[in-house]
Amino acid sequence: MGTLPEEAASPVKVLVVDDEIPIVEAVTYNLRKEGYATLQAFNAEEALALAGTEKPDLIILDVMLPASTGFEVCKRLRQASRTPIIMLTARADETDRVVGLELGADDYVTKPFSMRELMVRVRNLVQRAKAAVPDPDETVRAGDLTIEPSRREVRVAQRSVDLTPREFDLLRYLAAHPERVFNRQELLDAVWGPNAYVEDRTVDVHIRWLREKIEEQPSAPRRLLTVRGIGYRFRPVR
Image (cartoon, rainbow, N blue to C red; front, top):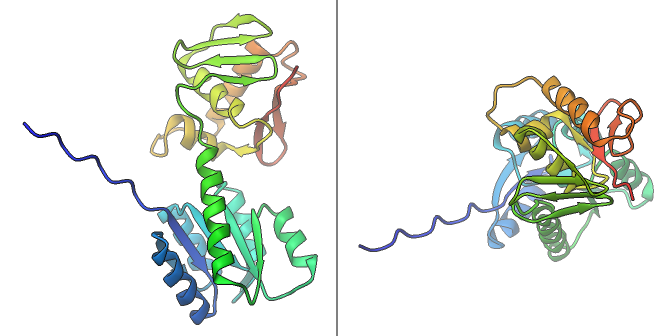
């Protein structure tokens, strides 16, 4: 009996957002040549709707959009996801770039831009995002914390810690991305699964339980930190 063929990997999906149709078409054409799947949006409303339903792997976002701005779109996107964002601007000064980066954009390209340079930036961000996904079997070491997924063991300063399966998965995910800030929905998607029917406050409860087990003073945590108004991040302690 022959073996079944391996399922082909889905192409990386890129959302292109710009109100200038020629730019959208040119960028889309070059992305497709590079093997990417593409989505198009010409205003903020379309961009947010597609980002929510299609879950692109990367977004190319113009600063100037009808009835809104790319800054506002970037800000709203960052409330729900960490999808890599490259912003486009027609202004050569650093003001737009600084504002965009402060709102969470990952990269910036000034118009008129080299299409070849844009493709390189897309490729680099996609590779960086893939590298950020932790190997499910790889031992995680972050400061005095060691997590061994193959044995489902956790040690803090050489002290063994007994965790529930969900606590283990949540801690492993946060510790594999030290200092990165995650909102509750991102953690729910990564740990409980994107289709799980649970309230976002479930994350808060599990964080509280984890603090009771891995922090010397749960009320003054040093490892599992709250980022007010956003979510949580893990800080290695040595």
